[in-house]
Image (cartoon, rainbow, N blue to C red; front, side, top):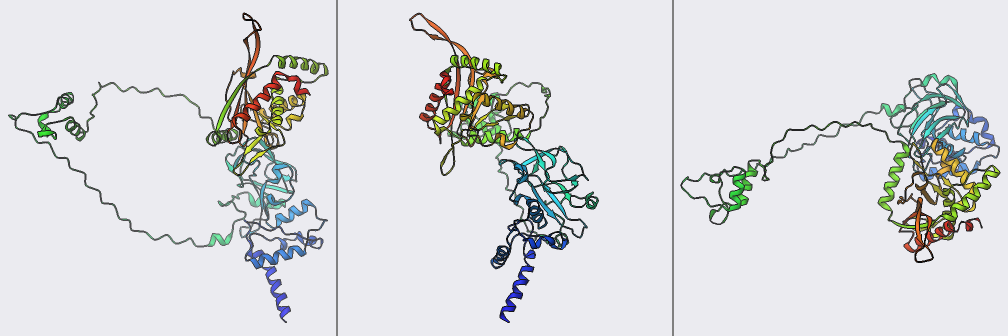
Length: 550
């Protein structure tokens, strides 16, 4: 009998597991065997799973899952549909279709007293590590359209690029909560509703998500009586403090002599104050400067010399236009402000002779044109030289953390690209291992994508060093760039200019082209001598460019 009672209690606890958990905080992924496949499609099997209750209940459920492993016959799509039926957000599914699919926030709603059919709430996904909100550029699907996994629902403007949001489950787009052009949508906020059956679309015509951002409305919560108002506290009104009374000056008899200091007499004449109305506080009742100032203060006058009255001149109204912040402008502003406030910058500048570099570039471009390839720019050679210098001085290819300095084995160079939308920094991965033609083609391709606002996260994430060139396109001689965190260095490249240099003889001189470059360093990671060593290596590659080809 004891064993039978234990079995009965055990089965009761298993039946009550879904009631012990809430949907919003999912900590369990329920798994099914082949034998359970036939029952998964039944509506009776739909259950919410959330936070487990007591430790004993958690142990019971974990034992149940251990005895029912996932069958190898279940497909990934089938498993995702199963977890969605159980109320588990799609962000917890173990597979992904690119970054946007793996981070899409969605959760399953359920039929309630309001008559809503089972549905899926699609939330604003987090498409980059720094993204906290996004904008809807445009919807590629409209309400009522059928959607299948892999189809693009809409275009989302993140803090760095415009990314396509793909559908993750088959169904119908029942309601678009955030339409085209919707801005500043928080990550996780509901943007659309999908349903499984086409008949359920009409029931979401006038649907609006609850303020809490959860799924279907809860009837029990709405019926709960409002909390009683807090008891009114009796607040005693403060008694106003009496204003200090200033004694009125007593007039002296006309026959009495008035003693005052010369400075007090001059101040009284300037402000037309009769000395007979002021009582002196100086030695033997003399009137001093402080007495005149106190009298003027009591009358609300200024002690300064009165200025002549002038007619009020109205300033002309300014003509201006308010330009709203774009997402890339916001994140650029916050990251650069964070960099200048938290990173101890210092700067090292060196002049490099680029005569040999320009000659080698001309030879390589002749070969490129003959073979039908694209021309190589000075910036491509600078990127290659910077990457090789980082390989030679790896201390500069590092970043600071609170516990250690992380030194990277990969040399990934971010290249600053200015567009109409803002500043982008696409990355050239393993630049030290690539040829000049490959670097040139990749830079042109990424720059074009940046101008079209079509960069994906893998196009700009993972850089270890940055190069910013204002010399070629803008003829800037020299400037200091701001470090792009979490990196510890950025190279600012100026323009090349002809200079007169001493010749071999006392009265001889020559002409040469020099380019100024400035290295901005994080002093927590790169000491002055290390930064100078890196610049020395970089200068060696620029002034002897043949060594880059070895």
